[in-house]
Length: 310
Length: 310
Image 1 (cartoon, rainbow over the protein chains, first blue to last red):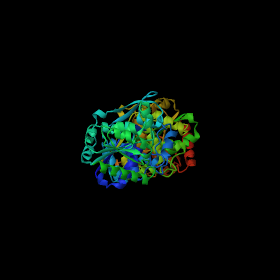
Image 2: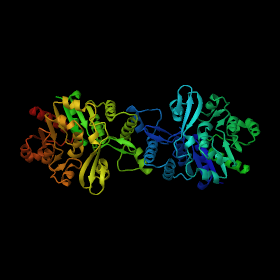
Image 3: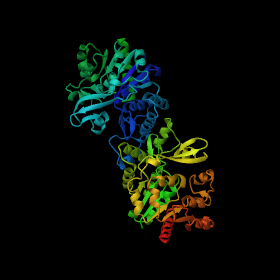
Image 4: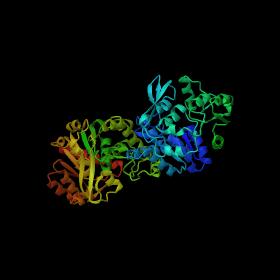
């Protein structure tokens, strides 16, 4: 079964890790959010791409949800000693990725060419595609600080400012990266990973041609909100601040027009009838991916669920 | 005695290290070559400035003549694994300097502001001034590869191509950095360090106003060539390829118009009469700076020699 997954950072990376263990490499394409990409220390950083790649390569730091395992901090501590900014920590292993990416971008390579080459080095078998090779920048509108880069909001201010809206700068001029539309057309189903709907999935869906390529396809979304709380990150807080009740039902409503099936955690079994009333088929299962076994189990559950929708 | 020293990399760094141990910080200004600066891995590298600063800060690697002591190579090895270039090695400690410099240049700081701030962090007491805040690029004309960046010639090709000439790109449009002319005017004497005359000292002298500020001053040069050989680097090879006999006498002739005194190594005692025939006063002493004692001894010898010229 040929599957395309739409993924942001940690939650998306965990599910595609499971999918990659279950599907043949040629049957899995992962389209990753690049709206969080930003420049820091004159380096081009792609947080979601790196989290997905490191996770699939077995290089990810399992404790932080970002960066690499067995990391050291030699360069970064010296940068801070010299007066450089300290709010976004970059380990020595991780820095290599950012430096080499920046060098290649400067030499004219596209972000999709770079990811493809890095995945070869890291022996990542499934195809990973950035949503676009064009520069799209997710900005968070906040009450306290005005417009922030997503990573400023997320890391520098630790998600504390009150969110009033989002901008995906330059998205209207962007095109999907090579292979994105083709892989969506060729997919038997599309999985929307348990990533933040506002800032991880909406930017992907906003790139021209992606949303329309999903229409008529079996699309399944997994709720990133369990029992009213985000597993990680600010999704639930964002819903509240934007005037929605943070719950898996709100997520289902968010995607309603696009999806055929919705995956709830067992803890949210009580919401199932309400989601079904939206006209969606529902799978209730364990969606907490605390270890590789859970990831594989959820991937298998999602694929079986998709099978039942075809 | 207020001294200004003109310095390139290793040889210059060693002598100013000695001078810094002998002179009060406010009596020593070091004007450093920036013609070797270049971009590598999208980072702005200033090899001579770093060598001088690291040496004065006690951070230099005494074995290599470049980079920092107790260095590690985590990031760099990963960059090479990802397919990045491997010919100019950057250690984890050293990388911090380049990354923070690049960030600050991108934020609009000048190279002299950056050096000043770094020297504060590193507790380097004498004033270190880049020759210019403008971008000057030393290019080596070679028979085999045409025009090379100096560091390409020096590191990538290990000085093997035959040199046919030099270019100091943009030097005619450059201005000395703030403080350079003032410190030369206020100096009682100027020391031309035992650096490469062609590619370390000539670019400094080529920045507008620097050469003319030396006229009429007691200027002393220390030969970087001992017994026909460069202590380090390609100076002797360059002389041969450009049709000169590599010797301390050739160096004295190189600087003849500018200098009042010339310092020869004991091994070159036999050249003394020929240098004196150029109209120069000569000091013969040990100029091999293998350890800090030698550096201090040479600095004292040079200062005493200057005293005798005033």
